[in-house]
Image (cartoon, rainbow, N blue to C red; front, side, top):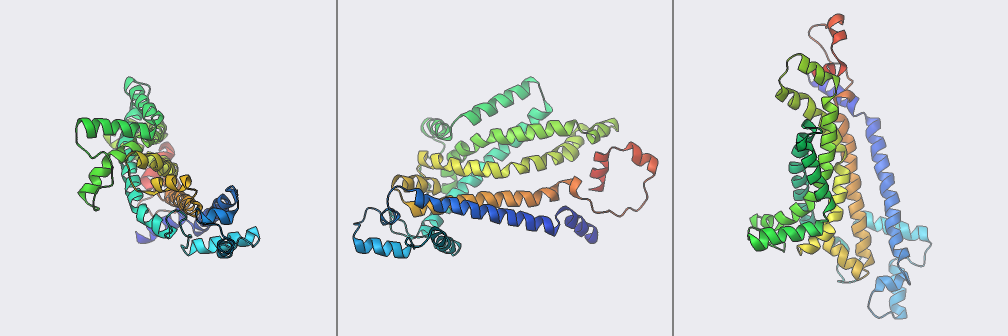
Length: 352
């Protein structure tokens, strides 16, 4: 049994595939790091003056800044020094506050991570069941109603949805706090993040709804589902054993896109609910032209999205039965006649 599982894993996720995915992600990160490094060069004015900020630009100060950031060196050398420091988590010093950029990001990363996690949970709990319902009621009134709700959620900006949630659940009903992160990591923090997570997750719900609905409709038209119905398998078992299993991979492929949307949505949501996370830090840094913080946060967000896509690419073959091509030992041989009448989809499910 263990050898069979091991052989299936090797067939679904060979070492060459892992190496290619890792190399592709690393190459993409290098390209993104070049684009992030160009932010400093694209800023108007002298880069040394930009890094010096509102402090007095004496010749001695400008010389010290140029020596600190190697601004007198060629562009490729500047990029190499910047990348070497970034790999060591030395992301520079904030122009606005004077503190370490890595420390500023670390203090706010936990709150934003909690907000994104809760927002993704909201989208998952709403989008997947509604997508399954819409797929099962394809082209019926229920399907049209669910899709209409998804369009409304997708068309509503996160900040507008946040204001509506504050008015209804904070001002009118008084169920949840209107703003702030709360105190401590416990229940108070969770209560303060419920409304921001709803505002953030509702905008992504429509994406998961569309992916799930399309996957359910496609699975219902597959041959192995038709054959299972012909054998008299109950609809509930068909839904659980065949349809929902087949929707996992298509939904999983959209997680990278959903994560990117959630990270981008935190900028406005954190502003509306007065949350001191990465989104509000990015807004303040852009306003005060704090280039080192903007560079570091852009690189961090790009790395998180690339990591999510990498995990998705590596997990997908493990969840797709069609990629499990390793031979499976059988206790009894299957007659050729019966194998000929069983659709390929059912054979894959039985082998898996």
